[in-house]
Amino acid sequence: MAKAKAKMTLDTLKSIQADVLAQQEKENNIRILVGMGTCGISAGAREVMAALEAELAEKSDVENVQIIPCGCAGMCTYEPIVEVVEPGKKRVTYVHVTPEKASEIMYKHIFGGDPVVKYTINGEFKTLNEQNFYQKQKRVVLKNCGEINPEDINEYISRDGYQGLAKAVLELKPEDVIEIMKDSGLRGRGGGGFPTGVKWSFAAPNKADQKYIICNADEGDPGAFMDRSVLEGDPHAILEAMAIGGYAIGASKGFIYVRAEYPVAVQRLQTAIHQARELGLLGDNILGSKFSFDIDIRLGAGAFVCGEETALIASIEGKRGMSRNKPPFPAKEGLWGKPTCINNVETLANIPQIILNGADWFRGFGTDKSPGTKVFALGGKINQTGLVEVPMGITLREVIYDIGEGIPDGKAFKAVQTGGPSGGCITEENLEIPIDFDNLVAIGSMMGSGGMIVMDEDNCMVDIARFFLDFTVDESCGKCVPCREGTKRLHEVLDRITEGEGEPEDLQRLEDLAENIKATSLCGLGQTAPNPVLSTLKHFHDEYEAHVTEKKCPALVCKPLLTFEIKDDCRGCTLCSRMCPVRAITGETKQVHVIDQEKCTKCGTCLTVCKFGSIIKY
Image (cartoon, rainbow, N blue to C red; front, side, top):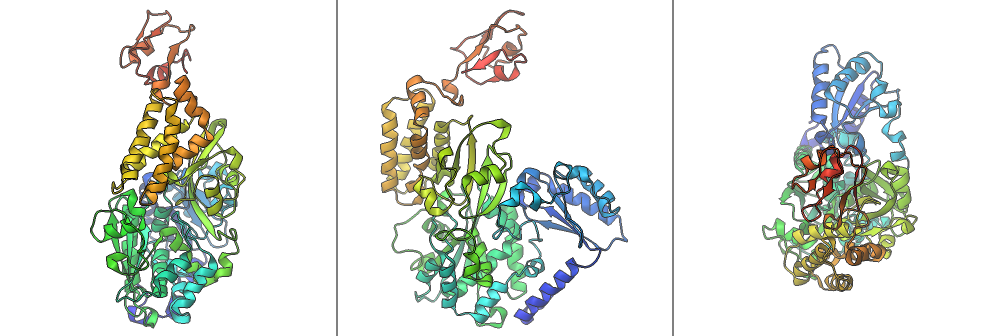
């Protein structure tokens, strides 16, 4: 580390910042940014980085090139991504990079000064920020992801890192910090949308020999990876925010509860904590003040219910992760019976910038009741998948069609599921509604932590509801009867319907059971588990009726309701009969074949292998 722990002051922070910026802006200095988030690594970024380093190692006379591993830039469609940044020149973005391409980029661009245009997006010298994907985004939480080395604290400091903490502990009283958070209107990004400053104000007055700040990084929604990307790309922002929160409520200890399935995030958090301690930004008498605060990591085993505050607390305490009745709320009696504040990753990532720039700055974007931005994991049937951070108040249509560039293959949009298994589906008629906490609830969905799954005409909404119920049945902790037994009964009814055994009475049975589960479950998991069922019943009642009365799946998804048939133009090539795993297809060579419907298992192999389009399903 550049500075000794005992000498860490505000002036030292600013000195580190100036030194790093001067090095980055030095004439002829070249920074090569390699996306090393989990998405990039899984696409081959480690091998790409090794190829870049190998080429550089052979050029012993080159001293002005830095290869920087960084987090995910958000445009996951194009991973592995490599960006070349030179002072005074336009940034060059290379996509779908392989080790072979990396070597060519080093040889031609870095050493030869000639960018390799064929490896850029659409063969154009457009940076990521010039793509449609980014035009309507506002990067606050993700501002450092893809820009800095998350394992180098000096790079974080160079972008105003720990300046918010310095301002808080050196210039503000704890109550001033809480008042700024209240004025900012920041609401919890974990799904509940509770005002962060208000939550802190509940914990601050409570007297105790120990208080705690907990970062909830137990991201469990299917298709959600917002928190993981922040932890991997900007871990120091979370440490700084937790320290600010600790100062505000009088806590001296923090825990990051992160799922063990996030090994890259865990490793980078461990590195960040070590570096912050070395520089005196965690530990005793931070920045020469009387404030002391430290952070440890606790690994979760992937239980979805541990995203709920009291279940998370139980898990940290070494108990089974199960919710408890409230009150008392954690702000009064939380971890080991002490006052505790729990905020999720995205909520925390906003805090240093709010303290540094002020509440009015944060309220400068978003809506009056939902200020700021929201990060969404955009996935499903969409042309551009990835992480998007947009101002609250943007419409779903803008996110899906302007940022995500619409539905692939010219298919028709059908619905978008927000809030994961706790949310609901939103149809075409509501795509113009501004996105914020209250608007989504009003149309039967919710913000959730930020999963956004787009569905097209080929998705069966009954099957979608069954998919989410399958998840919540597995993830129920089993403590309360409505959730433990009720979700199973819901799932059983959906199973019957998708297998062609549903009855007309099942539709009312689903609605009644769902409403009872919502009203009587102990925690948010059970209270929101029926949402996918209720929203699909409301918007796609005709699909449910087709499954029940006609024994047909309009989207041709539910296998037991499908029929495969060979048309009269069959050429009798025998390929389908030879490939059928149950020998359900018979016929002579060059004669029309026939499928025995009693034997057919609806596997679809015949449809896949037929080269002449002679097999249909309906």
